[in-house]
Image 1 (cartoon, rainbow, N blue to C red):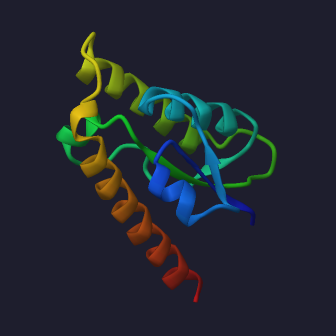
Image 2: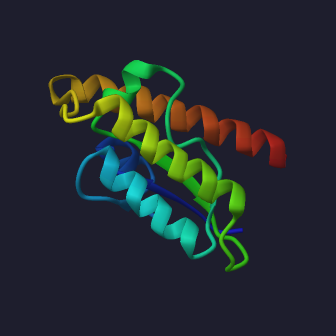
Length: 124
């Protein structure tokens, strides 16, 4: 199946020029772009939000997706809707932590590398 990486992480975009789809804006914009893809049948391969609550303040996020059958995947749709709500609840009216953007990019990229390695291991 065809895989893509929706991201606003410059490191990920440079590392995967053929697979990454750059998204303009902050993490909310990326999650909304992911939700739009899920509605057209794409499935989540990675969890949109990191496990650490501090990472919810990150202005960057990457999500690996796989092309589906055309019908929305119920599990992926529930997950992305829940994650958008979680992000909005945690941040409230506050802005993302742009001051530490470079550090967040590094952590996000490492998370994606780990996920890609695991997916490749499962295939092989």
